[in-house]
Length: 358
Image (cartoon, rainbow, N blue to C red; front, side, top):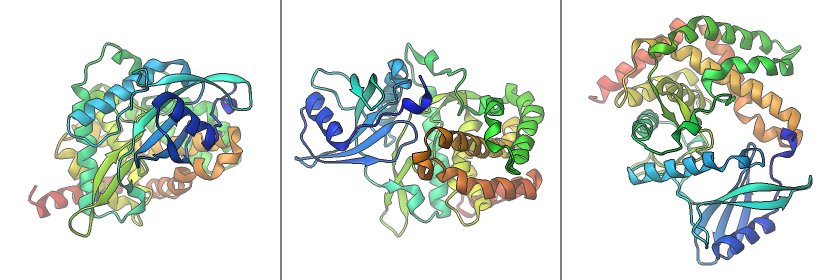
């Protein structure tokens, strides 16, 4: 099946019918939300309840085990004090179900879940104070230390061998590089790939393994106003990219996406690093590879967004959000060089800790 035809295309009224049929809830409002390859709906019910209905693409729906693990992980994190969504049980007691739907290219099975709705707005929509960025780094590290303790008989499923968004699989980008033919950015990405293969890859033996969220970005971290004039984290959403990886990968991903909304992207690194290392101090191999791993994530975002647009040109605006903001950062960081960027990150992290008595 073509990837082009795997994304669900359900109308709000069809989504409302699914909620009525499987959860015995009556929606008063069902709003389609932007999504990369699945379909999400914000559902408000007559009794005032709020939920998120997730309809997975038909390719991923073929392996429900992966989503059972994601649901299990969200519940595990919530039970251990982190603000995550949990799955609502169907009328028959299931955490999810397969629905046979025709989305315009024949009948296919789509995995459907209804999740609790968390308060707050994406962190991308509020000013990034150093204290909030510190909390981002600290929360990401806390999340991974909790996930490290999670036990489940199917955990091996999360060793997703060919998962394209796993930083361990950066070289898989090579088969998509044709989307940059004729674009000077192709040479930029080739430079990152070369540094990854020659400098980063040999150091993997020193990286510490763990289970990571994998997409701790500026749209998947929710915040709400605190008692002062700032904000605090109120939710962590979207565990679709969860996989077995490394602590430093989670940190690199977090750094990358939080830079996208900041006027001075390099300044984001210090507070996030300080927050992260208050929970998980980096070892030497992780520290010296962080710069190239951030550029690796920016490269993934660029190439895979361009490729996705060839499959879903109608969704170009959403698919290229991160890519459009990330390209200037990728080029600027290469221009500054590894040594200068690391100097800013690690010196400002130390100053943040000193200033705040940490």
